[in-house]
Length: 184
Image (cartoon, rainbow, N blue to C red; front, side, top):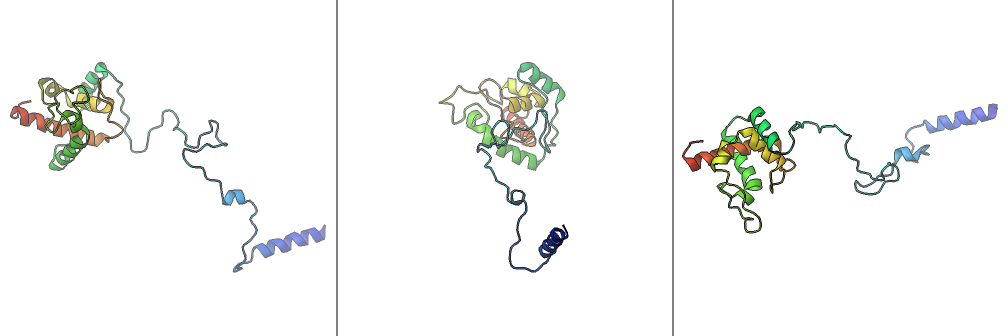
């Protein structure tokens, strides 16, 4: 027994020396070099066999603000009554809104929001954003339409951040004012 203890002590002391150019023995190599799996590859370790897992129900991404309005006209009206544009109008907000509008809105609604975008020959003509109906919608309703979509228009919530949606609404309001001579 003393010989076994002395041998273990000697091996332990030899493992603790520093400065050696010879690599040491790895006791648990799986903990040092774990097996990586690609995000979309099959994974035998998880329950569903997928490496990339969906977030747990009810979780919200960091720095994200949940949009607590459902689809449909009733929810759009509620959003119109409850939501106001938190972004103050400024030259910077207007410039960003113009860029967002040109990138995401103008292909369908056109450069001046008249509903004459480039894809119109392929799809049904969208409504003009400078028409009386669009001018009468509160900012919250426009935000709801951009966020949830309406009729053929898909939701833009994934492509356009919330703050940029509000800035685009500022730009739409400027287009409406330019079309009507400042009358809303």
